[in-house]
Image (cartoon, rainbow, N blue to C red; front, side, top):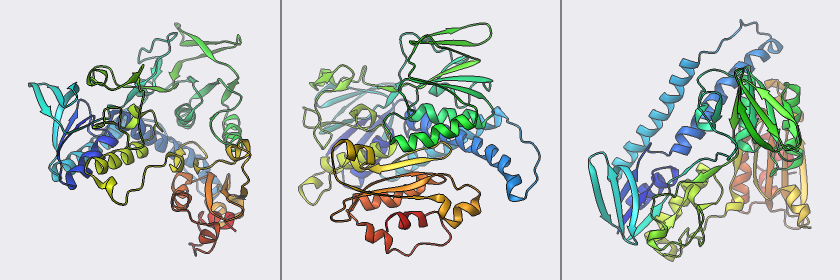
Length: 451
């Protein structure tokens, strides 16, 4: 079995190593960074900078714990070197893993010439590969609106900000989804003033309103200006900085602007349409639950699939595609269930959720049991000096099966894993409530919410 993968992000690396372990001859073509540009140029650098900002914020909290410390300063060059070091280390790990599995890594751009031929353009010239199966996982790029022109200096996309050339004095963030609010949190902690343009009536419009309200309260307490119900329609650069105009007449001025309004899949020049794959603009028109296109041996994964834009989801897609290519779907094989994918937002406080949300259940008229426990009732939160947030569990009132949950608070991104395992495996609230957990620990709020 010759399996050719175009795009070495989380999906590509996982598909390559899984298929190779199962006996496939695998070729992985990647033009930028093995590990994925969206992952290693967006996700990892942003979290590294958030961690730096969090440490600054923690210093301000030390006095309440009986510590006296001096003022801290920011060195953008050190931050930049640290971010680069982390991404290079992760890429080298991916390369060693692929090499250990016998995967051939080709540095270059790949495209489908026909349904079974993939051409790679490299620095040394061109190569051609015949394939029994092909997976396209070429990632995405920041979406740029027609009314804005990023310059990498004052008008930034997300990839210009790890870190930016200079630290903003006043940053105007356009977009209040996950990426936008993470940047607000990051730059507030690094000392910038921030204005956030919110096109809806709450930040994180796709999330539980109660969860969004906690984040909004924190933003307001930290001096963030929220322009709710305002859609940005124009952006000008001036001698002093930037001016962003909204459709309701409001104007936001700042030293820098950051565009965080989504992404587009990298499908140009990949040859999907030329290979007979039905396309709807930039998106694949038809996909089954195996991630197959209308051409049965051509698969797509990651951001190109149009599913949840999470590295964890892309990686699982890659694994499932590799298993399908190698015939494991003919035996016991669990399909990927996107509704059971856990996600997290690395703000202050952290936000994480999985499965059925309370608001969605009520909107569907579905009967559910909702239990909520504040972290203020747990000893560890009081010891940490941060009792903000809560654990919320949504379950079936008849069977006790855990259907979903939300966590707001410190280490929410770690704690949600417990609820994710419960949702994926159909565990009941009693299974969680009867588990003997560590004391004192934040996880005690999980068992308390399951009572």
